[in-house]
Amino acid sequence: MAIKESTASAVNAAPRQFDAIIIGAGFSGLYQLHKLRDDLGLNAVVLEKADGIGGTWYWNRYPGARCDSESYYYCYSFNKEIEQEWSWSERYPEHPEIRKYLNFVADKLDLKRNVSLNTEVTSATFDDAENIWTVQTRSGEIFSAPFLITAVGCLSTANIPKMKGLETFEGQWYHTGLWPHEGVNFAGKRVGQIGTGSTGIQAAPVIAEEAKHLTVFQRTANYSIPARNGPVTTEDVRHTRENYDEIWRLARAGTNGHPFTISAQSALSVSDAERQDIYEKAWERGGLRFRASFSDVLQNADANLTASNFLRSKIKEVVKDPAIAEMLTPYDHGFATKRPPIDSGYFEAFNRDNVLLVDIKAEPIVEITPRGIRTAKREYELDIIVFATGFDALTGPLVNLNICGSNGAKLKDEWSAGPRTYLGLQSPKFPNLFTITGPGSPSVLCNMPIAIEQHVNWITDCIRAMRANGQKRIEADVDSTEKWVAHVNEAADATLLPMASSSWYLGANVPGKPRVFMPYAGGFARYAAICDDVAQSGYRGFSLS
Ligand code: NA7
Image (cartoon, rainbow, N blue to C red; front, side, top):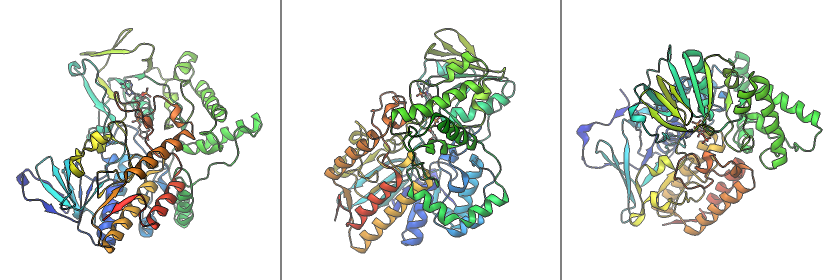
C-alpha cells in the first residue's frame, strides 16, 4: 500500500524532518503537496486524520450529500490532462464521485506516497530560535519542518449542540458531518432531523423516502433554489472539455469563483413583469446562479426583497398545506444573506404524509429523552436523530489544532475575539504558518477549488521566493493585519451579508463564538489581485528575514 499509516509503535520517536508539513488531504492539501513537491522539489508530507483522502468529502456522507457547485467547475484547473481525462456523471457531484475524482487525481500525480493517513495532529509548536514547526500527532509521532500549511477545510468541525439528555437516548443519533461509512438504514424507522441549512435541506427529502416517518425540527426557515440535478451528457462533457480555458477565465474574473457573470442590471431598474420573468427563468435553470439574476441582490435591501419575495411565493406554490408553507417561509433574513441552499425536492417533501415539520422557535426543544425529543409542547418518539446542525466554521478546525506560535502565543487566545489574519493567509505571531482558505479570505463565499488553487499558488510562490532569497522566516505584521481585518469588515458591510443574525458566516450558530464576519466578501477577483500585488511588491505587510 502506497499510503503510509501512522502507527502506535511510533510513539515518541525522533522527529521526522521535512521541508514542509501540510495538514489535511482534501482538495487543498493534495494540490499543495503537488506544488511543493513537484514544482519546488521540497520534501513535503501531508498529515491526515482520516483513513482516506477527500477532506470534507471523506466525512460528509449523509443521504443526499452532494456539491452545490456544478461538477464541471468543482474541480482542479491546473492540469489539462486531468481536465481531458475525467468526466463527471451528474450536474452536481455526489460525495462518492468527488472522492473518486480526488483519488483519480492523487493516483495520477502519485501523491499518496507522501500522505500519512490515520495521523491526527494534536498540536503544533513554533521554535523561534530555529524557525521550525514541530507537530505532534495523536499516536505520539513528531514531525518537524520550517513551513506548516493548514489545509484543514472550513467546514470540518462538527457542531453538535449540547442538548440535555442526549446520552439517555435509546435510539441512534448521528451528525451529518461524521456520517457512518456503512450508511444508516432508515427503513421502518421514525427519524428526527434537527437543522435546515444546506445539509438538512439536502438530507430531508432522501430520508423521507427511506424512513417510516421524518420529523424536521426547524429553528430558522430557509430559502432554497431547486438544484435541477441531472445526468451530464456526452455533449456536455465535450463542450466543457473544449471550453475549459474560458470556463476558468470567467470563474477567476468573478465574485464567487463561478464561471458565470452576475447580471449588470439592478433588480429595481426593470418592470415588475420583467423582473418576475428573469426570476422565473433563473428558478427553472436552478442552482446558485439564481443569486446572479441581478447586480444588487446582495447589496440593496429593496432589491434583495424582490428575490426574497419571489422565493417566498414559490414555497407557497409548492407546499400544499398553507400553514406548513407559512412555517417554512423565512422572514427573519433576506435571500442569500445566509448561505443559500439548493435542493432536490425539499419543499415537496413536506407534502408527504410521513413528514412533519416542528417549529422549534414556537415550541423549543426542552430535552432529549430515552424515547425521542421533548419540546415545550410534547414528546416526539424517534428511533434515529440526525443532527444537521452544521459546523464550527472556518476558525474551529484551526483553533482545535492547538497551535502555539512565536514566544508561546496560542492561536486560540489570539483569536478569542475573532480571527485576525493578513489576507487570510497568515496571522502575526505565527511565522511560517500558512492557512489555505482561512478566515479573512473569500473561502466559503467562493467555489472552493478556485479559492484553493489561488491560495496554494500564492503560498508556493512565496516559499519559492523565500528560498531564492535565502529567507527563513515570514510573519504577518500587526499593522497590515489590523488594516486587513478592518477591510474584511468594510467589505462585508458593503453587502447585506452581516444582516443575517443567525448566519454561520458570523459564527452565530455556535454558542459563545464571537460574532465576527469571517470570510472576505470583497469578491474573488479583487482579492486575488490584492494578493498578487502584495507578492509583486516583495510581500508588503509581511516581515521576512
Ligand atoms: P448550517 O448552514 O449551519 O445549518 C445548520 C442548521 O442547524 C441550521 O438550520 C441551524 O439553525 C440549525 N441548528 C444549529 N444548531 C442548532 C440547535 N442547537 N438547535 C436547533 N437547530 C440548530 O450547516 P449545514 O451543514 O447545513 O451547511 C453548512 C455549509 O456546508 C453550507 O452552508 C454549505 O456551504 C455547505 P439556525 O439557522 O442557526 O437557526
